[in-house]
Length: 146
Image (cartoon, rainbow, N blue to C red; front, side, top):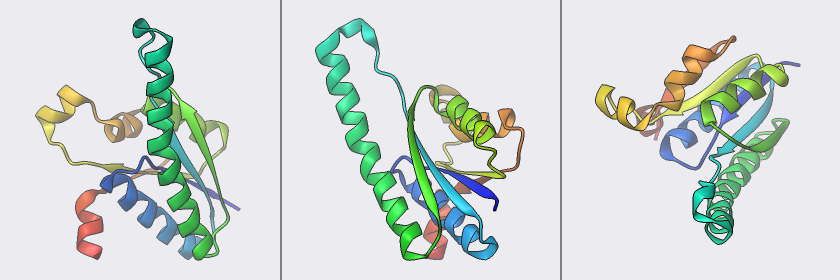
């Protein structure tokens, strides 16, 4: 069996990536690995802030992963998940490599050139750094399908 790694975080773009990745898995019979990456909290502010930031981030990611797993189960697709910490693009590429994923599916918010430079584009960095195929799914893909 092959594996499709699908990045998810609860955003509209991530939901579009989940939908497209599951569609591909249905067509190919591949397994799916969902990954959600939480950024590490800034430790400068101390333990109470760090704990709250960690809890808030996990509270945001867990429902997204749960929804993705439920969608996979509803379609009869074998799936598992991993929630990891670190730089999202680095961790997605590392996990794809370590789990020998055949394809990475990731959403893109379509911020445009200036906003991507200012805020950073995880999908662009994954495209640049990955050593395997990457499918970038835009928010508009999901809207067009609805």
